[in-house]
Length: 330
Image (cartoon, rainbow, N blue to C red; front, side, top):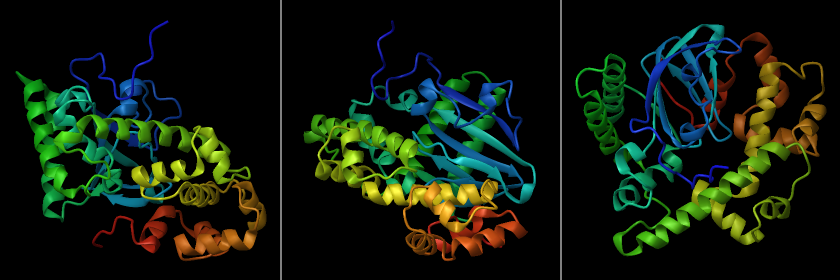
């Protein structure tokens, strides 16, 4: 039996970079796994990814955020981010994707370079799922750099690996100023302590989120969540705040609202009452569910369902209403 890789282990490939095209809606079972960004396993789960919208419009959905991307725009996805991708308005959407493992630039995560430049990016809630708009100067440079990387990897001229590495370094240099200051101290005297804190929080948070997403429909308490990762309730809350900037229950609540929106969009409970919808995603009170739904979406579940029965633009409204979505010029 092969030993299990430690968190953020470098991949076996010397050139852990992938580029390709994805056309949505995609076939149920694509023959080429490389054409399915965010679906991979192994080093891809620890990789960073950028999606570029070539044509059409794309709804990008996570429990925390939702964006509507138009042609020419893109999105940067930090490691462990697996958003739901859906073409807007039922139209076909063509994407270019770039996926790479950070070890290509920084080596092992314990190096001083990774602690100085990588950890602030992958621990920043601001950059977990960052939309890129060509109308913003820095974003335009980031998008231009990604297109150069994509074209270089696709054409593969002489010494293309070095050119891709150079361009990725430029991408990181442009991205760093956009990151909020890391919540983990990564200054030189505390490198070992910073690394331990980051790896500790990251591992626990991944386990807790997996538990929440598998049991969100059940009655969950903070004790249930903390027990799932073998921590006290207070330490569990501290881990969530350090890594995500929210409490475990805030994440659980947002995920339940997110899942209810997904069910409304899928029309899987179209004939069911709002109470049934609330109970199906873990709320024990329809009125409390409606109150939280209005807080995040700025309309009631019933209003949202009626709106959805007319047109399918699910997360455009959510992103605009919440104020943390991707605002674009009309």
